[in-house]
Length: 230
Ligand SMILES: CC(C)(COP(=O)(O)OP(=O)(O)OC[C@H]1O[C@@H](n2cnc3c(N)ncnc32)[C@H](O)[C@@H]1OP(=O)(O)O)[C@@H](O)C(=O)NCCC(=O)NCCS
Image 1 (cartoon, rainbow, N blue to C red):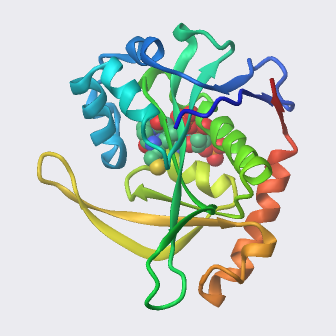
Image 2 (spheres, helix red, strand yellow):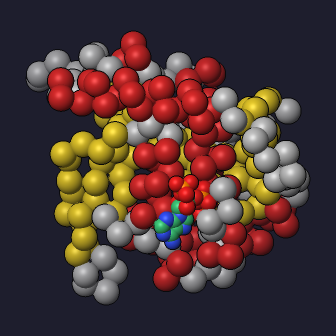
């Protein structure tokens, strides 16, 4: 579901940096980022890039708008215009393990995060950090999310830097994933918890203290940004 809210994320520490906007997007915006070189995408996002390139903007926009469990924002640099569209950031309700013998339920209290800046030229300029910070504010304040997780491949240092800077903690969970072209890699899980969720989400006690410190890191970084609904 493409969310209708529009957010402006301003870097207070660097007022000369144009705001990053999180806003709805569709076919016109997706068309602006095509074609995409799949080699600019790491494993965990390569399938999405290939889908977008193969299906085309119209079908992808339709598919995304009909996917009910995902909240997706477009990421825009400076202005909300199709030619300023640089990527997407989305939230997928994560699986809540629940009591034994009970089917997993999906809840917005726990959400999985994904982010993609499509063009390699636009990467490394702080857009990904601002987008993730903005969507975390949106999710905590509007959707009641208290716990996030995200998966990165081991080689994806920029994604890991974002998560670490925003207070995510690496867990011991690993998934073995096959790269296109036959290479294999490990995906690592990262988690973030608001203080009230640290002990209530089946996280190992060893991670409680790092999660509390992570939350402090998040609030310190968040103070350098202003996030407004526009
Ligand atoms: C990962 C991604 C979202 C990061 O967004 P971005 O706008 O490029 O990143 P930012 O400019 O906000 O930088 C984030 C951090 O990564 C670091 N970084 C950027 N490029 C890097 C590189 N090539 N190697 C190591 N670190 C790098 C930055 O220095 C920054 O860390 P710091 O603040 O501690 O110095 C973006 O590069 C992307 O879309 N990549 C392809 C898809 C993907 O990997 N998605 C995430 C999967 S979970």
